Length: 145
Image 1 (cartoon, rainbow, N blue to C red):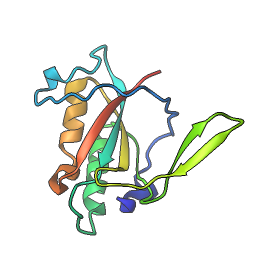
Image 2 (image 1 turned 120 degrees about the vertical axis):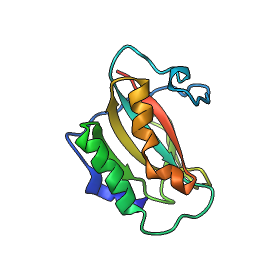
Image 3 (image 1 turned 120 degrees about the horizontal axis):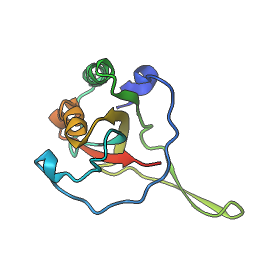
């Protein structure tokens, strides 16, 4: 996913706020996927690494996906995440602990920040991703104010 890099950046950056984890749900029908239907919104796609190693050269397929979302005026920003580099910060401002993370199978390796009119629109934006062809999973989270 490192091939995504800065090439997919689009529009102005958006400040993200932390939001609590919700229980996992499985849905095959967009109507069952209970995201807020109060109108449009901002969604974060977290691309989880496939269980099997993937071939090099995936970048152009992800770029096509990004271009498709950009053409539909849905892409806000996208990028890959540095493999094997990250920290978990805990504690407080006066006593901060930093623990280097290891990245097991299924770790998040990239993100897309998109706009969508409703849950059907956001699921369709994810459905056209090449990530599924490689056995990856996409976690969809609604960004809140």
